[in-house]
Image (cartoon, rainbow over all chains, first blue to last red; front, side, top):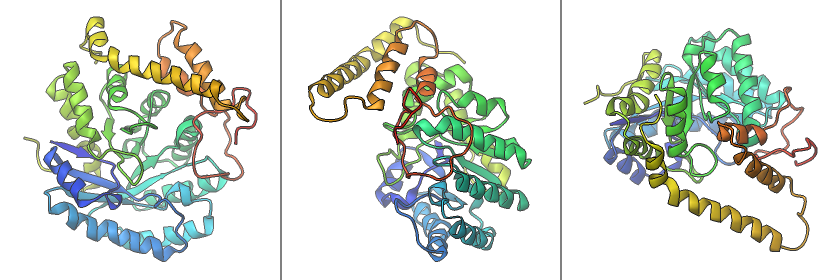
Length: 268
Length: 98
């Protein structure tokens, strides 16, 4: 049994839901993200949010998977501050949907000033509505700098780090994130983030508290079965079943339950 | 929580996988050397070679230090995003690369 707390199912096939269910997935959360192209209007985001809050929960339910979501305009589309503000203005109308857990995945992409502005306005929206925050940290060479800028912005706005998950951490960012009291997520990607082996190494070096794993499966090279593959890696090394359950089920459940809306079956 | 594996078990479990990765890296550098035309000073290849040196320095936390070596170490936001994607490393001299 496992939870994948970050996966973009709008980009995946129904077969993937079926395979995830067979591998033990019981619940997922799906952050709003970049579609691979820039949407031209806020109406495009309105339709996307309907897909996240209506269609995907029904598609997941066919396979016994509970679907939850996070809303935002992704940092890759934050360079246009005017459009971002239009999108921010429609988010409150979706906040009463029962599967919306909070604001995400917000953060930075290239660490630009406009991205910072839009990040700060998302943080303010989350705090105004007392919502959890899911943070995207930048890719590759931009990650270290962006992670520190994001943590500073959250601190400056008074966000409670216990209600913020900072995602896509790797060996150079996991310790600063945990030391500042945030939750941290490791994304299991074939090439550009953590492999299951490196994620297992990070657990061994930094412990299992406030740390989870996810597939972030999307329209690129990614693997919606990455979480069970990491479970298998931990098992192969001889880690206790209790440890494997903690990082792939208990930790996400504990963090996400703070929303008051997260639902996953009690573990077997 | 530490690793439950012995050094022998680590070698037994992972040697072949990483033998293949070292050969891939060697073949990539050979391919780069054989290729003609522009690109001799590609900053990413310089960054890769610098990382290989770091792997052999005998110090711990190599993965963290390689990632830091390839990271943008500036502290202020940039004026405008020049593109959507990322390149994987920064020029080691802090110039160009974008």
